[in-house]
Image (cartoon, rainbow, N blue to C red; front, top):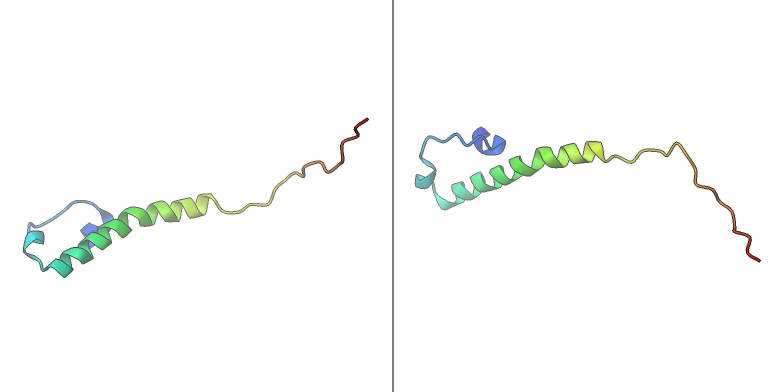
Length: 63
């Protein structure tokens, strides 16, 4: 299970002998292991930050 979550690719060769629902669990763990760190890293990097500047607010004079 740890190998599936970390997507290291280590296997003892018994995956084909597992029941179909165990194989589904392994597939889900591999998918979550692949997307989990990417999602966490993206969430930390793209946090909302306060702006250190303000845009000017004025009406242009025409005419």
